[in-house]
Length: 115
Image (cartoon, rainbow, N blue to C red; front, side, top):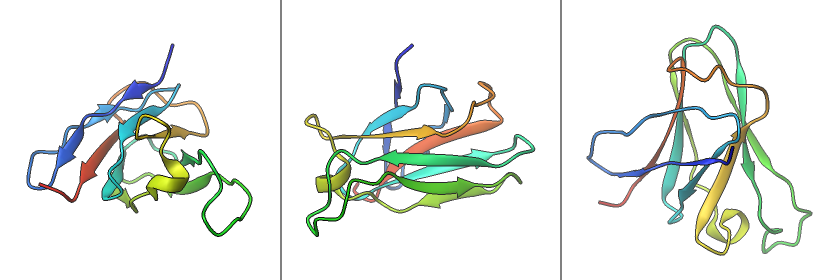
Protein backbone atom coordinates (compact mmCIF):
# COMPACT_ATOMS: atom_id res chain seq x y z
CA UNK A 1 0.00 0.00 0.00
CA UNK A 2 1.01 3.63 -0.35
CA UNK A 3 1.19 6.38 2.20
CA UNK A 4 -2.06 8.07 3.22
CA UNK A 5 -2.51 11.80 2.67
CA UNK A 6 -3.65 13.82 5.67
CA UNK A 7 -6.27 16.53 5.28
CA UNK A 8 -4.76 19.70 6.72
CA UNK A 9 -7.04 21.34 9.24
CA UNK A 10 -6.99 25.14 9.20
CA UNK A 11 -6.64 27.08 12.44
CA UNK A 12 -9.94 27.23 14.32
CA UNK A 13 -11.47 24.19 12.57
CA UNK A 14 -12.12 20.81 14.17
CA UNK A 15 -8.96 18.68 13.91
CA UNK A 16 -9.29 15.85 11.37
CA UNK A 17 -7.58 12.81 12.92
CA UNK A 18 -6.47 9.83 10.83
CA UNK A 19 -5.46 6.38 12.00
CA UNK A 20 -1.67 6.02 11.77
CA UNK A 21 -0.74 4.07 8.65
CA UNK A 22 2.21 1.68 8.34
CA UNK A 23 3.31 3.20 5.02
CA UNK A 24 3.30 6.73 6.44
CA UNK A 25 1.52 9.95 5.59
CA UNK A 26 1.93 13.02 3.41
CA UNK A 27 0.41 16.45 3.89
CA UNK A 28 0.50 19.79 2.11
CA UNK A 29 2.99 21.86 4.08
CA UNK A 30 2.75 25.64 3.95
CA UNK A 31 5.59 26.05 6.45
CA UNK A 32 3.06 26.82 9.18
CA UNK A 33 1.68 23.30 9.49
CA UNK A 34 2.23 21.28 12.66
CA UNK A 35 1.82 17.53 13.11
CA UNK A 36 -0.07 16.14 16.09
CA UNK A 37 0.01 12.55 17.37
CA UNK A 38 -2.50 11.07 19.81
CA UNK A 39 -1.01 7.91 21.32
CA UNK A 40 -3.15 5.59 23.47
CA UNK A 41 -1.41 2.32 22.52
CA UNK A 42 0.36 1.47 25.75
CA UNK A 43 3.78 1.99 24.12
CA UNK A 44 5.99 4.72 22.71
CA UNK A 45 6.39 5.53 19.01
CA UNK A 46 8.79 7.65 16.99
CA UNK A 47 7.60 9.81 14.12
CA UNK A 48 10.12 10.45 11.35
CA UNK A 49 9.94 13.58 9.17
CA UNK A 50 11.53 12.65 5.84
CA UNK A 51 13.92 15.33 4.62
CA UNK A 52 13.80 15.82 0.84
CA UNK A 53 17.03 17.80 0.49
CA UNK A 54 19.76 19.23 2.68
CA UNK A 55 19.06 22.53 4.36
CA UNK A 56 20.28 25.88 3.15
CA UNK A 57 23.08 25.72 5.76
CA UNK A 58 24.58 22.75 3.85
CA UNK A 59 24.36 20.10 6.54
CA UNK A 60 23.93 16.51 5.41
CA UNK A 61 20.42 15.25 4.68
CA UNK A 62 19.06 13.96 7.98
CA UNK A 63 15.51 12.89 8.76
CA UNK A 64 14.11 14.56 11.88
CA UNK A 65 12.49 12.34 14.49
CA UNK A 66 10.13 13.13 17.35
CA UNK A 67 9.00 10.85 20.14
CA UNK A 68 5.32 10.15 20.75
CA UNK A 69 5.05 8.58 24.21
CA UNK A 70 1.99 6.72 25.42
CA UNK A 71 -0.50 8.27 27.78
CA UNK A 72 -3.26 9.78 25.70
CA UNK A 73 -1.30 13.02 25.45
CA UNK A 74 -1.51 14.71 22.10
CA UNK A 75 2.01 15.49 20.96
CA UNK A 76 2.49 18.59 18.83
CA UNK A 77 5.55 18.78 16.59
CA UNK A 78 6.97 21.95 15.10
CA UNK A 79 6.23 23.12 11.59
CA UNK A 80 8.71 21.78 9.04
CA UNK A 81 10.84 23.97 6.79
CA UNK A 82 9.42 23.88 3.25
CA UNK A 83 12.87 23.99 1.61
CA UNK A 84 14.13 20.91 3.46
CA UNK A 85 10.99 18.84 3.86
CA UNK A 86 8.62 19.55 0.95
CA UNK A 87 8.72 17.48 -2.21
CA UNK A 88 8.06 18.91 -5.69
CA UNK A 89 4.31 18.91 -5.03
CA UNK A 90 4.61 20.90 -1.79
CA UNK A 91 4.05 17.90 0.47
CA UNK A 92 5.95 16.75 3.53
CA UNK A 93 6.24 13.01 4.24
CA UNK A 94 6.19 11.42 7.70
CA UNK A 95 6.19 7.84 8.95
CA UNK A 96 6.42 5.94 12.20
CA UNK A 97 9.71 4.10 12.58
CA UNK A 98 8.06 0.93 13.92
CA UNK A 99 4.91 -0.98 13.06
CA UNK A 100 1.69 0.81 13.97
CA UNK A 101 -1.39 -0.90 15.45
CA UNK A 102 -3.70 0.16 12.60
CA UNK A 103 -6.52 1.26 14.86
CA UNK A 104 -7.67 4.44 16.61
CA UNK A 105 -5.21 3.99 19.51
CA UNK A 106 -2.58 5.81 17.40
CA UNK A 107 -3.82 8.80 15.42
CA UNK A 108 -2.14 11.60 13.49
CA UNK A 109 -3.28 15.00 12.24
CA UNK A 110 -1.87 18.02 10.42
CA UNK A 111 -2.97 21.52 11.44
CA UNK A 112 -2.00 24.79 9.76
CA UNK A 113 -1.74 28.04 11.70
CA UNK A 114 -3.39 29.78 8.74
CA UNK A 115 -7.13 30.29 8.57
